[in-house]
Every structure is written in C-alpha cells, then in structure tokens.
Amino acid sequence: MDRQTVVRRVGVVVLAANLALAVAKGAVWYPTGSLAVGSEAVNSLSDAVYSFVVLAGLYITTQPPDLDHPHGHERIEPFVSLFVAVGIFAAGGAVLWQAVQSVLTGSYGGTVGLTAVGVLVASALVKYVLYQYCLRVGEAQNSPALVAAALDNRNDILTASAALVGVLGTRVGVPVLDPVAAAVVSVGIGYTGYEIVRDNVDYLVGRAPPEDLRGEILRRALSHEDVRGAHDVVAHYVGPEIDVSLHIEVEGDMTVREAHDIETDVVTSIREISEVDDVFVHIDPKELGEWKDDDETDRLARWTGVDSRRR
Image (cartoon, rainbow, N blue to C red; front, side, top):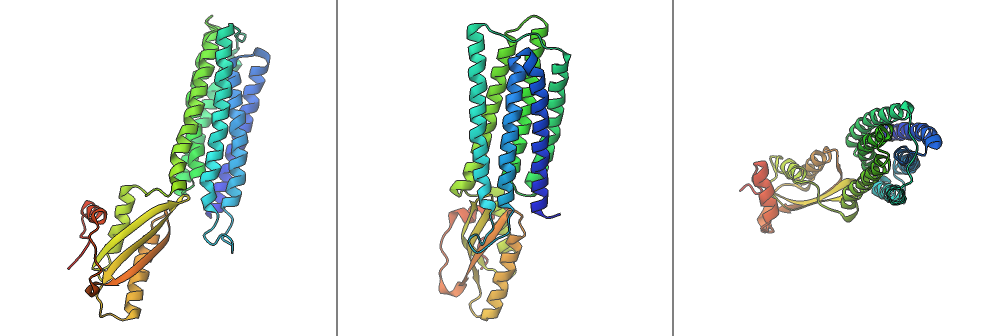
C-alpha cells in the first residue's frame, strides 16, 4: 500500500475516534457540569478539529509532484503540525482558565456517576491504541504530522487519568479535585503543544539530522571501492526529508563514464536511507589537490569506523 493511502487512512481513523470520544464525554459532562469531564470533552473536540486539519493537510502533502512542486508536497507537513500545536495551546489555556476560576469562586460541578468513570477509562484505552498506531505508521512513513498526532494521543492517556482522579474525588466528597484535575489536564494539553513545536521547528529551520544518520551517509559514500575520500558532507532537513550534498575524491585518470558510474552508485546507496530525498555528489580528481581538512567529516568517519580519506 502506498504512502498516500496509508497516511490518509490513519487520519480518518484518528478523526473518527476523536469525534466519538468528544460526543461521549460531552454527554456525560452536560448533565453534571464536571470540569474534569468537561475539560476532557474540550480536549477530544479540539483533537477532532485538529485531526480534520491534519487530514486535510495530509491530503495536500500526499499529492504527487508537479511543475510548481517538483519535489512533491511533503514539506508542508511541519506547517500542518505547527497549526495543530497552536490550537492545542489555545485549548489548554481555556481549560486552565476555567479551572482556576472554579477554584477561586468555589463553584464545583456535581457528583458524577459511574458512567463518567467508564467513559474516561475507555478514553485512555482508545488513546493508547491510537498512540501506538499513529507512532508506528508515522515513523514508518516518515510523517511528522502523524508522529505529532501520536504524541498528542500519548499525553491524552495521562489527561484522561487525571480527569478520572477528579471524578473519583467528587464521589468521595472532595469536589475541589474536579477543577484541580482539569488544571492538570490543561498542563498535559500544553505539553503536547510544546512537543509538537519542538520536533517540527527543526524541519523548518533546516537543522542537521541526528549524528548516527549523518555517519551512515558518510559510511555509504566511503564504502564504494573507488572512492578515495569525502569532504564537505552536508545533510539538512527540508521539511521532514533530508537533502545531502558532498564531495568525493576519485582517481583522476578514469573516464567520464567511469566517474559517472561511481557517482550514480553513491547517490543510489545514500538514497536508500528512508529519510533521504535528494543527494548531490561532486566528484574531485584526487590529483588536483582540492582536498581540504574537514574536522566534522573526520570525526564522523572515526565514529563510524571508516577513514575519510584513503591514500
């Protein structure tokens, strides 16, 4: 199954699950006024709205390349994820404000029945399944939007647990636990937004990928038997994917066809790394003396157990 079909299917599943949870929690909150359950209803409703946004974004990002976007549309995914983060911050702030107002005024919700307990427990279980599902597919398909959705679902497990404490507090005669639980839920919502921003800003500012991936790129370039050295190895994020450029040294007496074949082999090998999109290789005849000291490349070469220049 292609990437487009897989990520869209996940988006539909997450949207449907969040809508169902929002309706269930809202049905419990309306007759009782419980802030803990209400905050969870807001959380699930906002998740449903954001799931719709993500689904629409995934529809755009999975469109095939065209003349205006020759590399495809995947680079919009970090923007979709940041939009999700903004909405999450807003929802968390609204819940926190309501919780604080409740504590200050002493206005608590009524006692909540066992139905609320069942809904919150079911919510935690559903969110755990969604977390595992989104994370597995997001990492397999290199989709930051789905990974962001996975993080949101993971934290929703904690917020549902906090809301459950608030509900149980009202049942044992400690009603203040209801707004306190709502405040905890709001903190969890805000932390989800922070995680999404932290992870996706790297995609937007062109940060270098992790060291182990950079080392693997260098190892693959130097693994070709006719490559005598590598320098000026640059790898950086362009959206969720990685562009790579590097110089390799080869024997200067080979034909253009032979040098071309070496370049093709190196490009093909590096492109087999799932996160890599484009690879640009510049070939230097080693006799020209264009070699330059490159401390970072030498360090990565030592770390991966290879030599950045073979005499």
